[in-house]
Image 1 (spheres, one colour):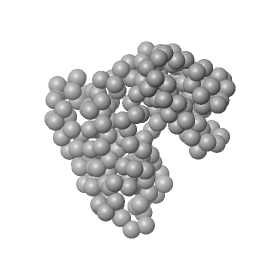
Image 2 (cartoon, rainbow, N blue to C red):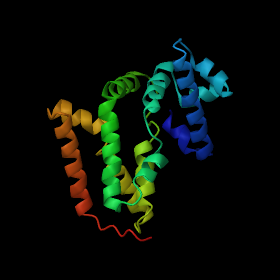
Image 3 (cartoon, rainbow, N blue to C red):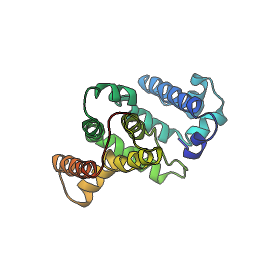
Image 4 (cartoon, rainbow, N blue to C red):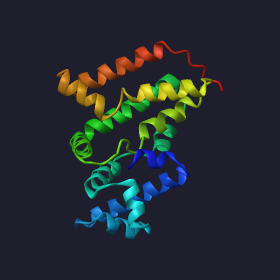
Length: 198
């Protein structure tokens, strides 16, 4: 998905189109046959030009669609954390995305490999971590700029990217990696005064 295209104009409509593209690709994947971006465009009911605005090649779309099958929607994750304190919700978001990344590590690594070796300007996936964190942080009295900065900083401590670094560079196993990232998040949370009443 091309980052700049999604940031301009009707963002919500573009996100909905992206979701339809992923769902259609997943349906085609379930048939077990090869398909093209044009096949997905036809199934979604959009033009070839539109589909290329989101995905520059079928490999990137297929890899993201495969990962997306196992991923809960941000609103579902958020709703499952209701009743907890804000700091516990943030740790819950981190735990969900770290477990997801480890449970689907090979698929995430394959996806990153495809993205990094393609000539695509793709720089952003579905941004689920950011969306989930924003819902939690919106419950606070923090300023918009603080919410934005914290959302981005917290995102760095969850998902496949920090797990790859902790495992491949630091030599940690899965449990050690999760514990290190949780410890880092807890340190950040200790330094932040979060008022939970809006």
